[in-house]
Length: 246
Image 1 (cartoon, rainbow, N blue to C red):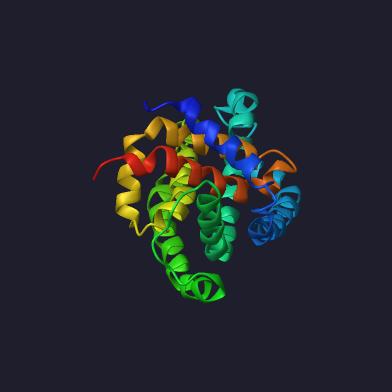
Image 2 (cartoon, rainbow, N blue to C red):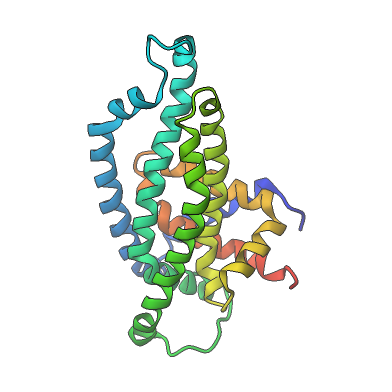
C-alpha cells in the first residue's frame, strides 16, 4: 500500500466507529472519562485566559506590524488552542496510558489479531502501569525538545508569523507518534522503532495526526478523541505499520 494521506485520515474515522462496538465499550470507558475531565478543565481555562494570551502574542496597535493583527489572529488563535490542547493531551495520556494500551490490545483482538503471550486481566494491567508511564515520559521529552524552539519562535517579531504553521505540522506528527505507540508497544516495539516505521509512511501519519487535531477542536467530538485515536492507530498498525520491514 502506498503512503496515502486519505488512508491515514481514514484510520481515525474507522477508530471512531470501532469504539462504539459492544465488545469494546467497557475498555473505552476510562480513557473517555479521563478525556472528558481534562477537556472540561481545558475549556474552563480557555474561556478564562484566551483573550489575555492573544493580546500578549499578537502585535499591539502601536507596533509596526499592527496592520497584520487581523490576518494573524486566526492563525494565532488556532496555534494557542493547539498548544493548550497539546499540554492537556499529554497530561491525559499520562494518566490514561495503561488503559489506552489495554484498549489497543482489545481492538486488535477484536479485529482478529494476535498479541505476544501475556497473563492478561488486572494482573497484566498492573504490570503495564510503570512501562506505560515511562513510555509517556519518553514521548514527553521528545515533545519538549522540539516544541520549545517553536514556542520561542512565537516570541520573535516577524518570524512568529511562521510559528502557527510549523506548530500545526508538528502537532500532527507528534499525535501520530503519541497514539501509534499503544499498539506498537503491545508488540514490544521501542520508541525508536516506532518512529522509524511512522517515518516510512509520513504522509499517512501526518494525515492521521492532522485529522485528530481537527477532532480535538470540535466540541463533543473532542471528548471521544482519545479512544478513537487509540482504536484508529491500532487499525493503522495492523494494516500498514506492522508490514514495514526492519
